[in-house]
Image 1 (tube, one colour):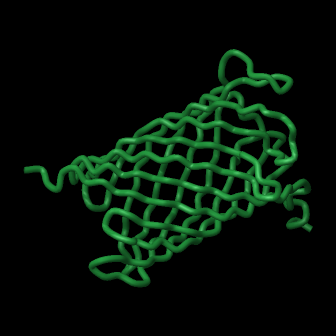
Image 2 (image 1 turned 120 degrees about the vertical axis):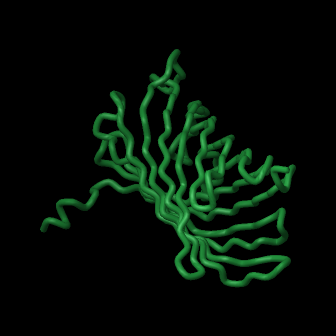
Image 3 (image 1 turned 90 degrees about the vertical axis):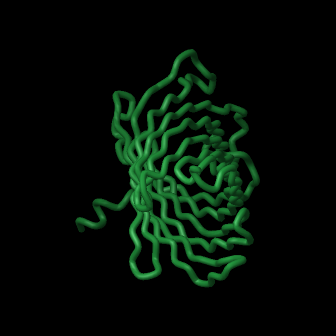
Length: 234
């Protein structure tokens, strides 16, 4: 009976495709500039859902600790792929994170703790309004990178992670729990500079009402490109 009472009553299932390109500009062994563009579209029918562009500076404090800070610009299209609305809601975020790395046998574990400051454009009656709603969001992600094949030229590995997000602020209301993402994928290092990744992501998200949820099945494809400017600090 308790389990039934806690089960969400209004869950909407959706299918999406995510395409991401990420560039890592290695300025030095300590510093890198990471930029990415992530285009997210509905599948069935094909329609734009979310465009995310992110840039951040990252600093390697030591082998097991990395810090980062940056800015994100996003455009949120209607949540219903059958909607005829052309509204795209701009969002600007700043973010800071600390990532801890652990090695367990041959597996690399990453604990990422991130805080985002979100500025989302105000909307009324499907029209953009002056000003922004502000809120904080905290994200924790536990990721495991498991090597399957590794040699001097290329490598293949399994990527697993679970990430939970909660938000707080005057405009969040009942919408404290934001979402949970679970992912499994294969990453193929084609060369020291290029890698490809494909996987499945399940995205469970609470809507603003607090009682309605999205359950999203997502096929994700990523391209990683690393450019090294300086190999040492000499």
